[in-house]
Image 1 (cartoon, rainbow, N blue to C red):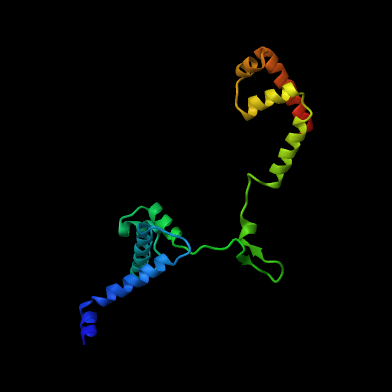
Image 2 (cartoon, rainbow, N blue to C red; image 1 turned 180 degrees about the vertical axis):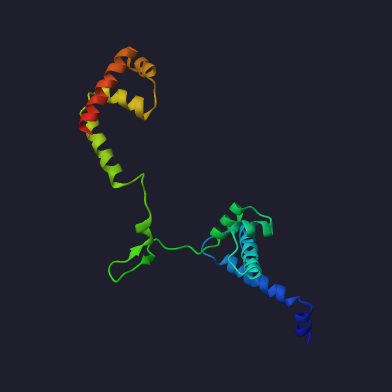
Length: 175
């Protein structure tokens, strides 16, 4: 009898819902802040409400104005609650070899051409004299000026300029 009275008064239901939410929050593979998660749930609730009201999928701007939060915040919050996807998750399979998420991710910084270019530059640098190597290293890898290099090596700025120009011509020939 006591339990029924708690249900009628609405005391037990919020506790159960709170426990379920806490379990789902604490046992997720990626930690998302409570405030971000709350924004996402408010956005999903507003989306459902607007869908029923307008008989169509609401725009992000409509959802944002409904709950008074910027489009960017809502977008970030909705992205944060998405389940993670494995890089080895197949996204396409036509009976042959499947295409995985990893196959669709590009890396321009560490592409094959980049590695080949690095190797070519290293091989070309080997063809320079020690003085030319030092000038190229100080000038382009450490960002020094010709005057700074001249002072460090003990030659004039004009000599540094001539040596740098000759080294660059040699590098271009081999790269």
